[in-house]
Image 1 (cartoon, rainbow, N blue to C red):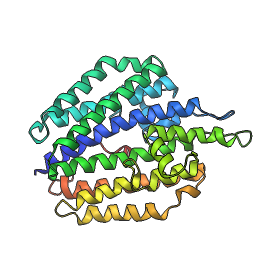
Image 2: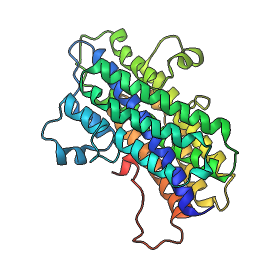
Image 3: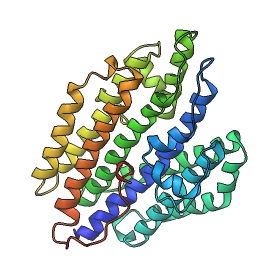
Length: 324
């Protein structure tokens, strides 16, 4: 397979995964804000910082209120990681190699692009219309990945699709967790139930609530949620599961020693870290470390499979959120 095709497949999936998970992040944050305990506060500029886009946001917006942050993350084409930009980029990636994918893939991605063009303005009309549009984006994107999983041969092309999906998914799962570290809680006056509602919103954002109750506990406790989302090997949106999937993909590809070493390093460090013992102040720092490890995996993949024979000045696709 040509490195250009492999890279386009990888980035098509990353852009689609980023669009879906940005929608999940926004809906999950809205739930967190509605469930804030008495005396707690949340600044919307923290959401931009969580996704690593604070510097870019400040270039275009003077005030970080809810409306500005939502427009930046959903509709602003000047933001390469906005939902509209990600879907547009995935559409362009797909258009150039339709013959590699099931025939309906282009049609569904193009339909998602057209849906957002028609309905995107509703995301500025209040939280309920925004939730409905973002939930539709999530559902449509899941139908696309279901088509790929159910219709593609498990060949080299499919492995690059899985690599992009799992790197982006792991990164965004850490960022959805990181939202709670941006909540400013008063030192006194909050019941345990009020605080734990924040973590229930996190699980819902990851479609993990029922699985958590079955595998961990009927009680939603923050430290157990952290340990589950970071380390559970069985749920598809946990960081540990995504790293295992990346290992599986690499073992099906040639010349995988460099990227595989980066993944194994990240997995060892993840499993050594006791996330359940962290307070929210230390959580952000530890999640940043995981995101940096995921960035190192992306760099190793790029060097080995996409730009091995390119000049140093060769252009690249949109960088991961952690590096923007």
